[in-house]
Length: 513
Image (tube, rainbow, N blue to C red):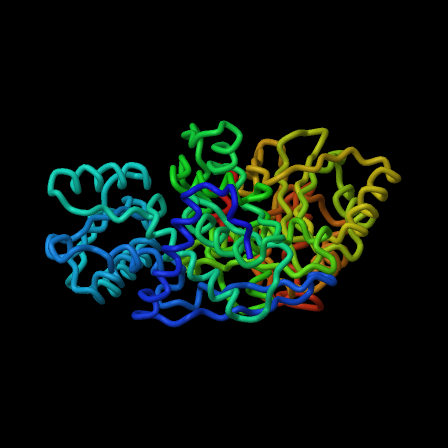
C-alpha cells in the first residue's frame, strides 16, 4: 500500500471518494475487461478496454458518480455540461438512468455520430445545444447558462467526484489479479482520468512508474507542471479531439504533479500507428485520444523488456470519415512510413532507372510527380520500410549519386498537390491504371509497358488498402504519331494489372488547364 505520510490532503480525499464511487457506478454498467496485447517483445502489456463500456468510453463513470450525489432539488432543476463527445454521452446516460434533465453544449464541429449517440443515450431527458467552434467556446456558453439558470454544471474533468468515478477503472485493474504493474501509460487531456487512476494505482502499486501521455500539440498538463500552475496553451492541435484541452484542470493538476513520474508527448502519426496496432492485435478501432496510451507504450517499447505494463484504451467513438486520413499516415507491422523527395534529371528513362537503382522490393505507398521544370525533377515517394531496409535505401541512393530529402507529412501528400506544366509537354497520354497491390507489380508494369517508348510527365498514386491499386500516369512522347501508336498497342489488361485505359479528353483538358 501507498505510504500516506506527508501526502497532500487532496489525495486522501480523492482516495476516499473512489471508494464511495464503487457503490454507485455499477448501478448502470459492468466492469470492462483487461486484455493482454501481443508483440511487445518480452514486456507483458495489458489494455483496459474502456471501449467496451456502454458509451464506448470511460466517461460514464465520472458523469454518473457526480450526478448520483446531487440533492433532490438539484436533480429536479436539472444540469448543464459541455463536451466534445464522450463526456456528453456519459451525462446523457446518467440523466436517463437518474431521471434528470440535462442541457449538453457541444461545439458546432462535433461529428454527427457523437451528437446522435448523446440523443440515443439520453432520450427525452437531454437537449443538445451546438455552440461555438471549439470545446472552450461551448464550455463558456454552458457555464454562462448554468450561472444564469442556477443549474449545476457537470465538469468533464475538473471535479473531484468526476475524477473519483474515473478512478474506478483502476480499481477494476487492481481487482483483476493481473498486477502488480511496473509501468502505466495514462493519456491526459484535462487530467481527470489520469488523476483518478494514478491515485488508485499508486495506492496499491506504490513502485509503479506512471507516464502521462499527451499529444505533441496539446500538452497542457506537461506545460502546467513546468510552470507550476495550469497554463493556457496559445496553439492547440485537435487531431486527438477528446484530449484537446487548452488548460489542464486545477484539481487534476494538483494530483498529477504529485503522482505522475514522467510526461511524454506523441505525434499524430504515432497515434495513428497505435490505432492500427489496436486494430491489428485486438480488432478494436480506437479514437485518436483513446489510443494515446498505447502510442506512448509503443514509443517506449524498447525500455519495457521484462516489465508488466498497463495502458488504457479509453474511447472508440471515432468518426468513420476520419479513417482514410488515419490509414494514410501509418505503416505496416514493423515497417514505418517514410517520405523521400529524390532529384533526377528531367529526361526519358531516369524515373525507371531510379526505381531500378533503389526501390527493388520496397513497398511504395505514395508516388507523386508532375513535370514542372525542363531540367530537373523531384518525385515524391511514400515508403513503408523496416529500419534495416531504410538504411539500405539511403545507402543505395548515396551510392548511385542521388540527391534526396527525407520529409515529414509533406503538404503534397496531404493536399494532393501535383503541379504540371502543360507547356513543357509535346504529346502527352494519360493512363488510368488499376494494378494488383503486390510487391513489384507497378514497377513491372512500367518497365514492360513504358520503358523506351516515352518519358514520364505525371504520376499520382496513393495506397488505399485495397487489393487493387489505382494510379493516374502521364507519359509524354516526341510526336503525336508515337503517342497514337502506343495507345493502339496498349493492352486493356495483362500480367500484374487489371485495367489500363486512356484518360478521357475532358479530364485531360482539365488536368492541363
